[in-house]
Image (cartoon, rainbow, N blue to C red; front, side, top):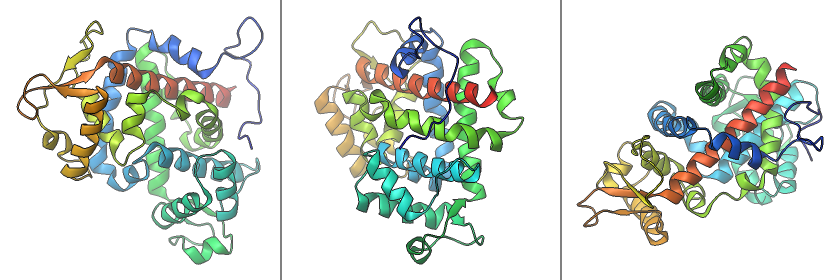
Length: 309
């Protein structure tokens, strides 16, 4: 199953085909402004977390993040008459087809987000297991639509910060219409891009464990954006795991477990005594984080260009 039915006429190379997402991301990654934008992302993600604790819980792992994008895409396709349907059967089938999750995992996730983040299309009431079994379609709640819009605006603003264009103004002329067009395109790219599905080892260590992404955001956000890449480690103004976990929706024990694994890998560490000196972040983790943000940004940029064409 593919969510993309249209073809684009931009970003073609000399062979008449569009470069891979990784090639496009590498080009953006090489832009000197990309470092500060990626660090800005990390700080914004952390700042937004207390205000969007429920929605943030949907994205506690990369698998759940992809599953959430899948649900949004099926809804957008149905709402715009391009096929698709957001029901339990179609959702589980799509998740298995794209090898995002097993049938049981997809089913459990579907019921979770339908209960808290989507409503029945027949009434503004929380979705239930009974509705799912009878294949009643669903749509995002107002809160979910608002959270989706914030995600789009963040990435479009980041792109504008790099090249000075005004994508965000275009998008905000009619956010709902643009999201309906862009979401299936974005989901298709996320699900088919090898570098999204299999990120670098340091990034993956955080992104595939519960709340690991927030820990990674906090680590990257604590780096001075002006720090160069000549050294293998970059000191940050964080001393303890407790300091890292403060204000996040995860226990100190879980945070310590994740950081210990990252420490064993060489992704993080302490400049002196563990827990009594400044921590450091590896160049590898920082580079992989920036590259992953670049991947998302070129995918969103391409989807907007398709939506306005």
